[in-house]
Image (cartoon, rainbow, N blue to C red; front, side):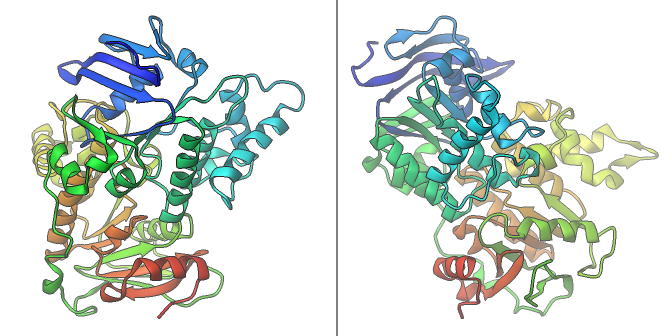
Length: 491
């Protein structure tokens, strides 16, 4: 193939295997200058592997990587960065024990001299201000002390900073997955401005509305291959879902009519957020799905963790009367055990029923893991593989399997659909509703308005307080946004 005059990147016949798994099968991909190319597909379709090859962090088994018209023979992350290719991967790459400014210095070693901290801090703060006005991140903040949404903001801003090397192409792999709708909107607006100014972007998202509204061109991947490529205008949501290999669910809530009136089942949780002022408690009854909404970092995760802790260590502001499991949103820090197998990660909350005498039965562990692998469709040839062999979305499925496979009657979910494809989301939504009908209680923090509509009742948070208490029939995106910013119940 010949490189077009406006092409910045071309990948020709790229193949990659990981053991017996063929991750990429003769993939071709072209990105033009000043273009937003969206890459979509289910978890395990090969999107992230392809981007790792373009970033130089993974070597292709076969195929060509052509950047700016030149085929790259000895390709590496340093070479990619020198050529102007930047990456924001789903699993963040910041050093947690360093500050925001120090992480910027690691990325830009040209920042030297006695005042390098000031220069690095000014560089990253300026870009944060440009992309995320009102971000609340300081240059001297330790990364490990920041919530995941702000870490994501730092990672994105750092990718767009420039010193001695240009910014020509930025890969954004699920960049809005941990951001609330307001902050995600800021990022998407900046991305479009960057593209208008000649920077190219590869945008990966499972939020199909974001893809359709912000792309110039869309490429669909399935089973390690590109199976469709067209202008964004040629796609709608149904075509995208069908091409990826799924079926769109109806927009109405099919099971809305079978829900019990609120308060007719036993009380499972009563909790009061630690806020300045305010008197609204979170209340969750057996079989209810309770949603937590509002801007990221306003106390939703803190309350989930308080409920989780109160299950074993009673506290005056939280009452819990059943066993609890947690599906963590930050799976790398709080979810997976990276040295363990998939089966071991799934079974860790079910040790009592896996015991045979004083030992854990491998047979019972395998039975549990295989059951949930099939039920939630975790893409792996072997449950004894290391958990890190899975894609990010499949790792998240394993965390769901861990919680739902346990005996917990209360399941806490901290924005758990980050990086999960639309087909899996629909399956998990049905699974949550089925489990709720069986008496399980779900308390679900989510940054997606569509997911709030799956809940029976929603509490909106602002500055650590519950500022709106909405029944499902009263829930609208406008009410959530108004409460998030104004801080008063809009009813």
